[in-house]
Length: 181
Image (cartoon, rainbow, N blue to C red):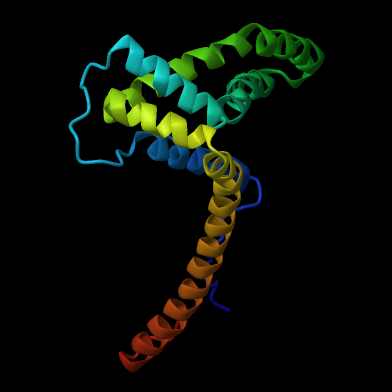
């Protein structure tokens, strides 16, 4: 029996890859300009402050907070491979470090605000802030992540279905050439 190639990832890899993809998509969403005006390469402090308000309104803090835990857990797991007998101590140290490094999320917020501000003019940032503070803007903040999750799930299913079709077609074409897959 020939093994069938599968486009599906292991269950363990999916959450990490999904989180990474979600972070990337949100950062891309923060960075795309909406108008043709030329944004500042070195944004003013006022622009960065406006961008920070937008980034905060859009929920970046809740998105970035798990990243600190993820980094600490990853390092802890590396040390666990050295000696699993240290699990109790490593867990205690990891809990402490997670609390110690929690404020570092502010670094990500500031970095994102600066990036965001470098893609928009101050006038655009004021308009965006006004939009996100409006009823429709608040609804967009709530509904966009849901729509993105649904889109990613649908895209995954679409990719799986396409892969199934490609496998059938590839086998058919290879059979015509004398190869039985």
